[in-house]
Each structure stands twice: as C-alpha cells, then as structure tokens.
Length: 196
Image (cartoon, rainbow, N blue to C red; front, side):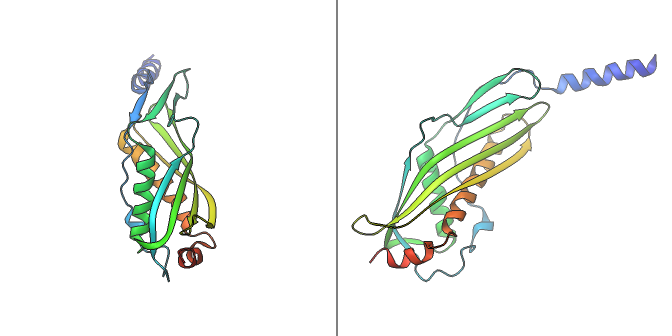
C-alpha cells in the first residue's frame, strides 16, 4: 500500500510541475556580440564596407510557434522589435569584431529570407531557432560582385517562455548564418575588388 501511495504522490508531483497552458509571447530582438566571434575571419587584406543594408522578404512575419509535447496546446511567438534592425546590428557586430569598418568599400546588402523559432514545452522547454540570410556585395554602380546564401541555427533548453533564452538562441543562429556567409569563397576577394 505504501508503494502505491508513493507512486501516486510522485505522479502528482510531476503533474503539478508540467506546464498546463501555452500563451502567445512577444520577444524583443536585441543583439549582443559573442566574444568567440572575434578574429574568426583571419587577416583581411581589405576591411571596409560603405554601408550595410538589410531587407526583410519574409511573407510570414510570425517569429515562431510554441507547442505542448503532450497536449493540443499551441501559441504564436512574435517579434516585439524590428527584425531588420536586429539583423543589421548582428551583421555589423560580427564585422566589427573581425576588423571590418565602415568606409570606402562595397555596399553589403543583406536579405532576411527566413526567421523561425520553435519551443517544445512539457516540464521544461527545448528551443530551436533558424535564420536564413542572403548577402551580396555591390560596387559603386550597384553591380553585384559576390552573392551567397546561408542558414544558421541555435538552440537551448530551459524554462518555458524565457525571453533571455529566446534572445540567446536567436543571436546564435544569426551569428552562425552571418559567419557562414563571411567565410564563404569569394567574400574576401570581392571585399577588395568590388568597391573599385
């Protein structure tokens, strides 16, 4: 009998900790540089862009979705600030950490193709973020000298609906996509020759 009571108590304790509702949330997109990104591009023979322009071409502006693992509960995640400003801040941050300054050089045009989060909830939550970017270096007359696309991912695990967790994994995904673009073949060469 004691064993059964203990089992019931354990089940009640676990059930009490499980999330029973899933509400919509709005996440402020704020970028913070990651010290690990400093110097990862190595030596750059040319280190200037004239400007960074970001365009958002997503048709669905919803940031993501929150779902419950064992119940039919679902809610939207929206951005509480401008995704374009966030991407611009992130790209500028990674470039600055790698010695790229704003000056005489090609224009860097970034396109936000995809931005999506998922949060899977039960007692705690698992988080996933995906950021898809296209980058293009353009010369003075607007001619394209280099273009590439990349996707970055970030994830985490913790308490459900945690804004700081959302921000951290989104920044990781943005850093990942940005670094893949900047490390891609042709970027360094185009950075030198595209502004002429």
